[in-house]
Image (cartoon, rainbow, N blue to C red; front, side):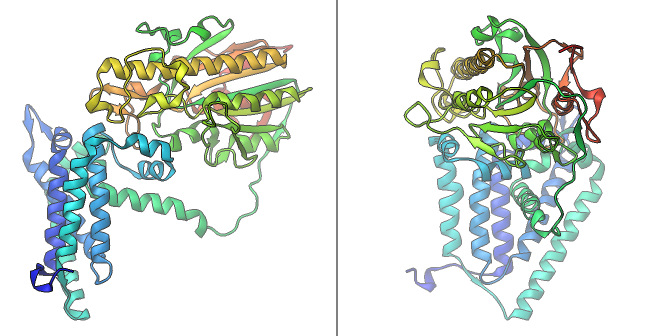
Length: 514
């Protein structure tokens, strides 16, 4: 144990200011170019506005941290903020991501496989110099607190001073800072460490606990009824991170990524558009409307409904539950194709009427190690990128080859889904679309994940929307098809009358006599 004489002694207010200043300055210095680009004025940088914004951010951080400055909480919170800030700084530096509540929620839902994929030797300097060394220094410092009344008074003074400075800075450069915030779609907030960590964590926690504070409510009443019974199985297949740009059936020429779909007759290739680049937020755009789930409405109307998943749909199938693929054929490792036996079993029991089946092909084209999303036999395009540090260790050719292999596998899985439906001889309609696309270092952006409200890059927004039907249909022609239209389209296909149904949004019409 270190002798107390060998330790640095300081007051809690000095520690607050010193720790906050160092953490804030070091983390944001690493990514200052990403932040400063939004404060351009003519050919240069508006340094007055940039400095005012940075000082305001620092003062707000100190003011918030002051609220946690108590004898038993100060060091634990300082260590926690250090760890989180280091991790966030790394991912902003490597992938240009923005940190908001959706990113925090995605992190909570990230599985062990994705965590392993994200680990890289490139993280070692960040872990060493932004985590290990600072934590050692925090533990070494001996923080002195005055009597309760006096140290609380000191905290109150520090809070008041820093808060007023922050307000003054924001007031003086309000127009310039507001402009930067609007132009960047709040990226200047989502990239400011650790302000982004604190604000996004608070927002995510608030969203997570809110349901527990609601008064118990009666079961949601859904006004849904079938007005025209018919025979039809509707299959909605939702993919993951598969962008339209790399599907050969949409004009991609670098590799032939869709040999199966190209030979499949009767397909309709539509231009889908996503507005959320996080699965957590994208799925509700397809499966939820006005807080009511699509599966809830369809099942309440008396239509048998099932959800088969490789990766979870979260609560979007809560009304009927979701069945996860098991007994997978690749030494126990599950891939998207492993939901097909569940589909086969379902359609084998079909005799007549309406039926709704949701497939979540959640492996799809998700990074960072694209090769983990499909069986080895689909590693057709080489050389591949096999390192989680895609941006630092892989060439553009390797990245595209790896990603194109995932599209090749999506093509295979969709082919198997269509084959299953065709062989079953049930009257069916299949809709496939991806939850969002993927950036492959275009404009320095890698993977996906933009906070709600930020315009998605085309690579993340433009998604495949593919329709195949064994019954006569017509497609309403549109320049593009937003994901929410799928909700109304499926209600229309089932002839469901509901207050949630907007007929004008439906883009697939059954022809008379079908």
